[in-house]
Image (cartoon, rainbow, N blue to C red; front, side, top):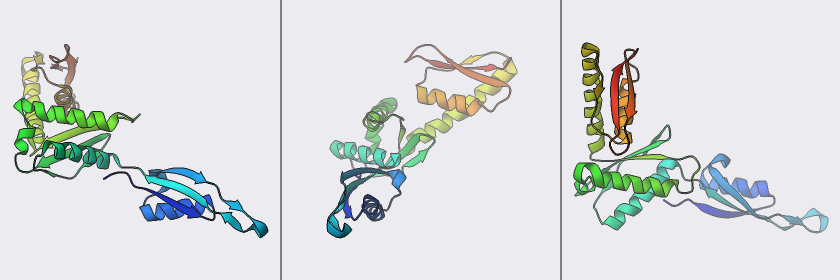
Length: 208
């Protein structure tokens, strides 16, 4: 949904702001406040003109990502349902389900990657602190992530047995991050990336 914005009047700026925050149901930290008009007093200290403020409720990152995604999917005319948008450590994750949403995956996930890139571009165009967006369709990415995690663990065991490095296939940055994260807790194993995009690869090796 769009960011909510309302105007309120009060005998003072603080009173007007408080009334607006109560109606929006948010704290002052989650609001953008604009003082449109300061109050003025007439005879005997009576308020001649009230204070006028405009208060806008900031969208939470997950709300903004969901709104942008809904707008794009509506234009694509695909029957869909959007699951819960989860915000955690700078990432917003959303799973899409519904009729024909398999079309959103595309060849090797190319359509889904393009949609994810577009949503991230729109959401971050005016932000200083970037939001990282992960879109999934019918848990397609989740299943791939679980498969990649299992592969990384198997290859790390091979490295321990053979004492030789393993160079994985070229992967995008998100896939490489999964491998690094999966193996970062292993005291015997280290990982690093080499090569240039789109052929950048993860190397799994023993710690020296």
